[in-house]
Amino acid sequence: MAVFTPHVFRTESTWQFIAWSVMLLGTVGFIAALVRAELLIRSLNRRNSDISET
Image (cartoon, rainbow, N blue to C red):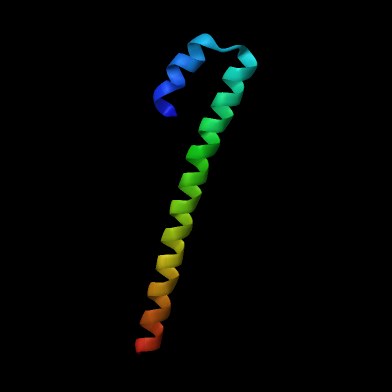
């Protein structure tokens, strides 16, 4: 999808440009949130395993 973004921005109307921008930013934000959640879950699991071993 990101490969076609410059072409879409050149050829589409303003509203379609805004829609593509929102979709692209939403996708990046969603992936960042998933990565952050995964890192938090791993951190919590590591803390819990450290506490149970002592």
